[in-house]
Amino acid sequence: MPAESPVDLGGHALIEDASLRTRNTLRVQARAKLLAEVRDIAALPKLFAWPAVKNMRALVLGEGSNVLFTGDFDGLVVTPKMRGIEITGEDERAARLRIAAGEAWNDVVRWSLARGLCGLENLSLIPGSAGTAPVQNIGAYGVELDEFVHAVEAFDLREQRPTIFARSDCAFAYRDSRFKREPDRWLITALELELPKSREPVLGYAGVRDELEAMRVQGRPTPMQVAEAVVRLRTRKLPDPALIPNAGSFFKNPVIARGHAETLKRAHPALPLWPSGDAQAKLSAAWLIEAAGFKGVREGDAGISERHALVLVNHGAATGAQLWALAQRVREGVRARFDVALEPEPRIIGAHDRNLPA
Image 1 (cartoon, rainbow, N blue to C red):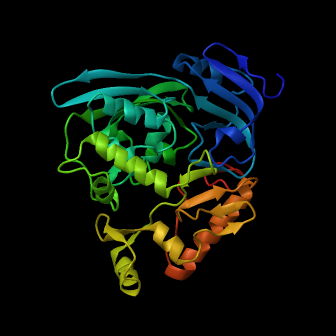
Image 2: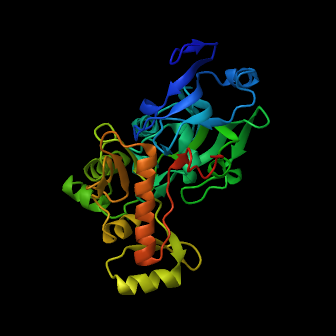
């Protein structure tokens, strides 16, 4: 097969020596030995039985909004392209949706709101595909996806068979799940969400109420109004990947022992912190990074956004290795200043990959 020339094999297409530059939102150059775009779930067993891919490592890649390539991938990249959203059941209280993995997440949010369903409004404008949402257990403005998950459908890459996980089997946690902890095993093909038709809006996160006031919303806001407030906040605070390549929030908000958090709060009264389970507290990673002097820092084309300290940006031709080196500098700076370890949200693929052999 010529490089970059897709071969349609019925239900999926294969590309040899595929460029991944336009397939990750940081727009770093990397190549995959083989890339498969899968349109039909039924094609998956046939794909993995093909001799050329049978013993390859596999990497599932959606829209590439939560990955940093620090080098090429010497294996098979699988991109789910399955489409479709449908209501599979409902009553007067809630409706159950089945969403194919290839749907864009923000389209799912808009689709549900347009049909009078609520719950996802705080998750508006999060980049990525629906299939990657459970992996990261996406969350924003006080809401996390796992609250609405009924089931996750996945293809077991090890056993070569489809599996359905109930919500309780997904091991969801803050920006985490069993799918993230077992990254080489599961290819999510669809998810089922149960969304209420009415619920109390979640407005406790900083900025949401202020945005609603600026919109002149009085009384209890509708889900559509909350979604609009969130979109305005995200648009104003976070750089648009279409204008300056980035992967959204690059670091998780660290969860540390409450005693350590209270000591830091006494020394730095402006530090935001929130209770997080027994004897723990969650800190603002953005505040820590900015206080350590990294907001707006630029090293060549690798930088930290001037608009939001959590966002690692590519100003043009930064390599993945250069971006990762800057991220490591940020982590070391925060650790030295506050004795707090920052953990990246995106998966790091390449020589520095924590999950795959280098």
